[in-house]
Structure formats: C-alpha cells, structure tokens
Image (cartoon, rainbow, N blue to C red; front, side, top):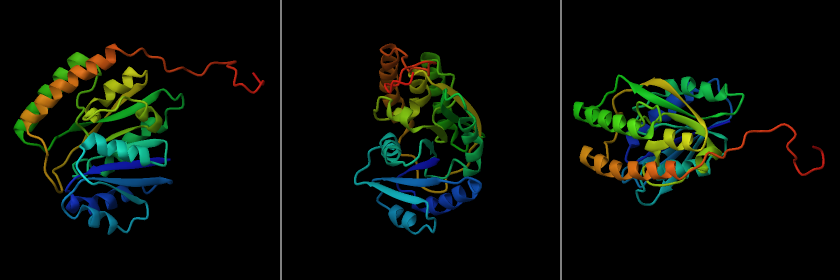
Length: 245
C-alpha cells in the first residue's frame, strides 16, 4: 500500500529512533515498507539502518552523494507500493504526522489528487534560515503560482507513477507542487509540526541555496510554459481493444 522513502546523508544517530517512530505511528497500517536511501554517507549510517529490528526496512546506498532529489528518485524507483511518503532523515519531520498527511490521498476516490504536501508550522531552524526560506518561498509562489507556502518540508505523499512521469532534475523535490500541477493533478496541503534535528547538519548555506534556486526556478518556469495538460480522465464507453465496449 505505502512505501516510506527516507533520504539520508550522515544521519546515523537519527535513523534508528526515526524508524522506530515510523513503526509506532503506522501501527494501524498494513502493507507498508521503509526505504532508507543512503546518499554517500561517510558515517555509520549503513550500520544504523541494518541494526534496526524492523522487518520492513530496506537499504539502498549511493556510493557518492547525489543530492536529496537523487536519493528520493532512487527510493521511489525501488518502491513496491503505489503510494510514496517521504520524510527527512534528520528527524525534523515527526512521524506522528504520517497518518494525517496520508489520509487525504487514501480518501481520494476520484483519483484526481497526485500530491499531499506538508507545510511546517513552529519551525525549529535558525532565524537566518527561516528568513531565507520565507523569501525563497514567497518568490517561488509568486512566479509558479503553486499555492504552496513551504516547499522545503520533507513530509509529502504522492502517487508513485505520477512522480516517475515528472521531468527529473537535481533539486526537483523543492518544486513538486508546481510539477504535479503542471501534469494536471490536484495538490493538497496539510500543516505539520517541526522539531530540532536529531542528527546531521544542513549541506547547503543560504547563499548556495539562493544561487541554485534562481537557476532551478527559471528552469521550472520554462517546463511549465512548455507543457500542455494532457492527462486523460476515464471516459464512459472508451474502447479497451477487447471488443467489449
């Protein structure tokens, strides 16, 4: 039913407790797996994951760091289930919020929702980080019109095949609402809590994020302008090639 994908880099201390929290949060769910994608860690991340007593855990390793989007993409490609939920490996996304963010997609009987995006409240980041993030989100929302207050939240749930249909590029995880809307899907938002890191550190400075983000934003604007929404809706009387209608 559900694959939990956790991109992780040098977060060995957080992963054991995080996996245990996920198991407790989803105790009423059946048929889920936990995929940890080790993005070129140089610490004991592999040992921490393999030491977990959970039988649901799968481990994938990148020999060299490829970035968060690459780690998510590897996890989604390896996933066995049709719904994907992502959360950060540093423990800042509380697993207690998983049932809350999964529920809208499970309730989507019409099959029109492609993504449910978490939006952090009560952020536990430095003032400079919050200010830089707020400015970047404001500019992105103004230009892309994706209706999303906070694309940096790692807690998201989406349809696997819809994600794999998206154009892949580095840092694409920050533009998922706009990309799903581009392909004709509905995007929903859920406020989720935030907490201090359990382990690890950020791998980008505010200046690095700004420089990379400016290039990415131009690229996503181009992708949106060059795409026509052609995702077909089921139609009554559509022939299936079997001679039965």
